[in-house]
Amino acid sequence: MYDLLIHNAWVVTVNAACDVIPDGMIGIHGDVIAHIGPKRPDVPPPAARETIDAGKGIVLPGLVNAHTHLPMTVFRGMADDLPLQAWLEDHIFPAEAAHITPHTVHWGTLLGCAEMLLAGITTCCDGYFFEDAVARAAAMTGIRAILGHGVIDFPAPGVPDPAENIRTATTFVRQWKNRSPLITPSIFCHSPYTCSDKTLARAKAAAVDEGVLFQIHVAETREETTRYDDRTPNGSLTARLARLELLDADTLLVHGVWLSPADIERIAQNACGIAHCPESNMKLATGIAPVTAFMQAGIPVGIGTDGCASNNNQDLLREMDITAKLHKVAGGDPTAMPAPQVMAMATRDGARAIGLGDQIGSIEKGKQADLVILDSTHPAMCPIYNPVSQAVYAGSGDVVRDTIVAGRVRVRNRTLVDGNIDEIMRQVRAIGRAIGKP
Image (cartoon, rainbow, N blue to C red; front, side, top):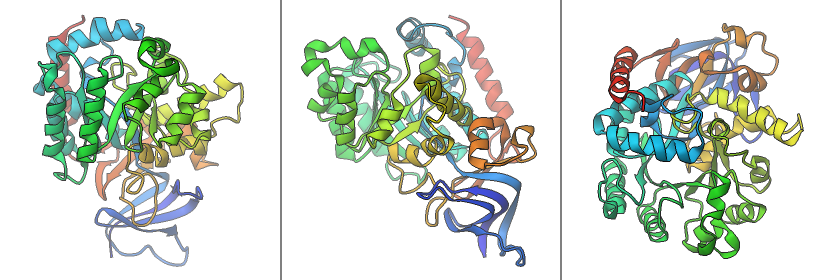
């Protein structure tokens, strides 16, 4: 007997063979996928403690948001239509200094996690401050999360003395390591332009010592790749990072918009992952990352929404559609970035990029039972010829019916099972009124 059985579904496995099962079913024992296969028309579904009829909907692996800043839901729409440096230095940094507290982080994180679960995101990779408050809130929602404590070389929320930035991040990692099966701690350096060489090297060394993922924004703008020419051989930002021993399989590089062919080769040789954030990059007009070149080099690339202050939503299905179309028009090639490739970025490859590829990202026996069911009764899901294309080009958070994390149903019939979304939104609205418009 299974603990949970899902049947009457298009099962999009996103396994190595990209198998799609038109009338499939999935059996779950505890938090693990125990069976995937077609339903035999002459045999009733096997016994299970709970059975979900997918109603001929599409079952995908749980979506993986490879980069976000969860508490920044409280800044959604606060400073739109600005260039990156003005947005960051004139609005976001001052707002964080004035308004980011454990209280605002708690409610902002709850809202961010609720938004993601309702949109079929079962795993996120986050980086922010007061990350202990982030972890406590995320754990309440049942989402799977890699949570990176922020490191930056000036006073920051919860770390008024920059000399304490590495120690504070390390303390967080030790507090949360092995504490929850769904929460994995990490260390997140904001960027090479807000952290000195010494800070970057020490933060990465701490991550290596603790055996956790190291995250960093890299080459988001053209200016960033040239502002430290005097520190780097041949003006290469990645050469600087390599000299500091930051580049390896346990490093996630975020954005990578202005990486050169030499940078890409260096990143591939060092087996780093990349988080691609197309909507954030488009909104801030920072450029279009050379994602096709990343993939040709064998770099695992995931898709991230970035924070709600620079996107302004956490809808990875919409982000998939944008990813596919952006790179088609950028290269003038309608065959570029096909739907199966984009689907893999949002699931299997995103899991690889953040170091969880052996646990999640595809529907396979032995992997964690992180799943999302798209509702076939939604107009955008009618008719279905190719479920992969349907999800990528017609999907959005609106078509998500059910979300399952580690075998537990977290969203059922578009409703959070745990958590009072009305109360969460009431609290965040109150925070927004207190912040006001800068």
